[in-house]
Amino acid sequence: MHDTLRPVMVPIHREGWPFIGLFAVAAILLGWLWTPLFVLGGILTAWCIYFFRDPSRVTPAREGLIISPADGIVQMIEPVAPPSELGMGDELRTRISVFMNVFNVHVNRIPIEGRITQLSYRPGKFLNASLDKASEDNERQSVLMVTSDGREVAFVQIAGLVARRILCTLAIDQDVRAGERFGMIRFGSRVDVYLPEGVVPSVCVGQTSIAGETVLADISSGSPASEGEVR
Image 1 (cartoon, one colour):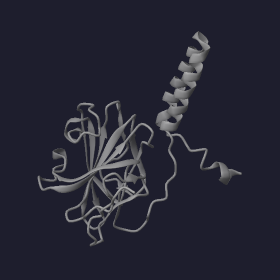
Image 2 (cartoon, one colour):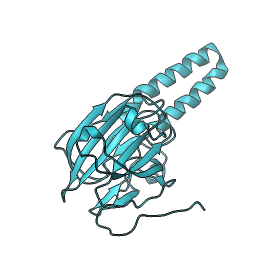
Image 3 (cartoon, helix red, strand yellow):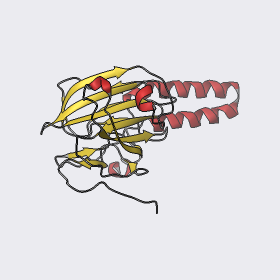
Image 4 (tube, rainbow, N blue to C red):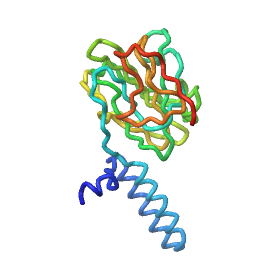
């Protein structure tokens, strides 16, 4: 019975409980004022519980794989300069942008095993995270890490139109493994991953990615970039 219920009884991230409580109290108060409003409040409370779900993931364990840090749609893959605050220079690197809508799991995960070398938080605007300029203008938390073979991988949590808090639990010099949880962004957002020089993506624009499971790139592979088509 326990194994049967496991896919249904998904754990809730601890960040969500205060919001779930507020939504539940609001539903009760609305229902007290006018009974039909309790139904609306109940639906919103159920959505809040759904938003803060934190399911387990099965992370590919092979060395050299860069795993998606976020659930969502691969929205952009393009060569751009990495965030200036990380001091990685102006040389273009392939950036993979994963956009999370309000129905995706918002718990973020480490993309590859290594050590955190730099953290930088920047306040900013709250533009729609699907816009290209959100990478530069929006509030963001940038992270730089070095893999065991000395390659730099950067990833950036970007706040969205309704996102109002970026949570990042990492510390400088912290050793991390691919698939480990490191934070979340509340209510719609995006995560950018900057690949090491010469590494090509294994995903395509429009593809759905799963945090902690989908392989974005393979450092050790010499295969060409993936191409895809809608079918």
